[in-house]
Amino acid sequence: MESHRATLQRLRTSFRSGMTISENFRRAQLKQLLCLLQDNEDRLLNALHQDLAKPKFEAIVSELDIVINELHFALSNLNSWMQLEYVSKTLATKVDDCFVRREPLGVVLIIAPWNYPVQLLLLPLAAAIAAGNCVVIKPSEVTSTVEGVIAELIPKYMSPDCFAVVCGGAEETKALLQNKFDHIFYTGSQAVARLILQAAAPHLTPVTLELGGKCPCFIHDNVNIEIAARRLAWAKYFNMGQSCAAPDYVLCTEGMRDALVPAIKKALDDFYSEEPQKSPDLGRIVSPKHWSRVMGLLGRTKGRVVLGGESDEADLYIAPTVLVDVSEDDALMQEEIFGPLLPILTVSSVNEAIDFMNRQEKPLALYAFSDKSSVIDTVLQNTSSGGFCSNDGIVHMTLPGLPFGGVGSSGFGNYHGRWGFETFSHKRAVLLRGWGLERLNALRYPPYTETKLSW
Ligand code: NAD
Image (tube, rainbow, N blue to C red; front, side, top):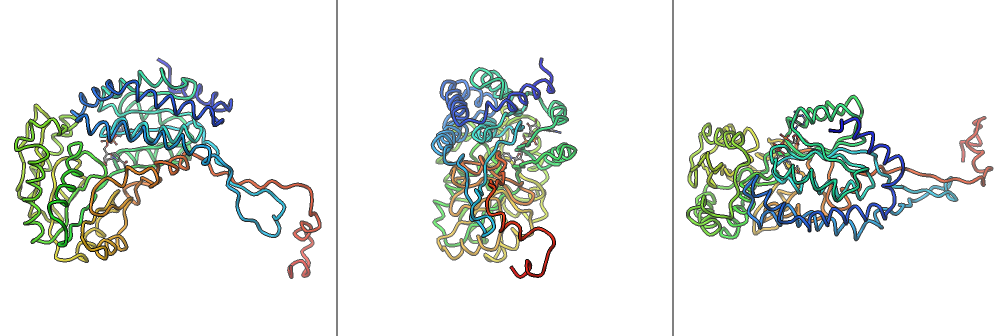
């Protein structure tokens, strides 16, 4: 097996040769990635099913189509993204050419987690290719079937001189991180993100961190409860609650809570039947370790289970679960749940909900449900989060026009569409000057007389 050092050397030599710079090369590689996804749809769907029991519909919309759409978007816009950006000039630079030139960063590293193992690896890869970089991708070892398929397909479809896959877990990644990259794009937990920053520091490597956190969902009294419950339940239990932008907990009044619980029950029965474990439309927890972690939270909470609560370790199953009487200092509120448990906490007003949310770390997404636009606006204006979506969950992150990323402890930097192209590009400031106007230039040379200052 090739050593990390040799892999990086190969990619760096290719990068220095300039082969990734042309629009044609970038287009060809983006199209190859498109072919990889289209030719191998069944293999990827099967791998996702094996690793996460991902329902076909969820896998298509959230793993394959989202990347395919991004690739089409990049192919349609690449030419305009690559154009020089001319900037306004001053009197002293009037006859110069002043522009921003987007240049690739070099050899970049993308490290992905297991919850959307195709999307979270290939979406940033598409952005890095569009920006003209050579790329090492490191899939999650937890979803090992997907990891194997990706490791086999990438060298078949993409230029092996410019793109490489490194497999393995923490030890392998730590070894990889000993090397110097020109950018590290990391998606995963806050704990590992700290290690990534430490590994990047000796090389002064810039880093993008796409992290998680507890995404709150405020539900105002003025809503269509049936629709709110369906949208909330869909966003929460999609991928078994293992989504970085899933609503982590609900804030609402006691009255709303009492109406919401039966409405969520109705939504769950409609979605997954009264026997959700038998439903083909509900995924599974990724591994026994994560199953134990989520069950540990359920064991430690002082909250009361009002829906669900059943589990089956052999099947890595935990029922879609709703809990009430959960307080701010409850076990469920101390860490990101990342599973199908939904605590409902009560507040008496919009302002109390805003104060509550502002006492927590800034989340990746924040949701507010209300019939009143003034209430939505108040929540939007008085809180901070990576993204915001009213009267629904998760859907804001499907748009390539919107930047996707966190703020504060939910991460920094962003991608999707042009935002990803920018993340993987250096914005080089260029001023091209000729030899003219030397009399005007002479004003800046010493001796610095008073006359020159009066100019
Ligand atoms: P993780 O941090 O355990 O693993 C992510 C990647 O880091 C994997 O490729 C893994 O091999 C590698 N890794 C693990 N330990 C390492 C170490 N000690 N040194 C170097 N590399 C190491 O994260 P996870 O459990 O796979 O993902 C869950 C977390 O990711 C959740 O917090 C979730 O919110 C977050 N997440 C965020 C986004 C986002 O877009 N913001 C998306 C999905 C998941």
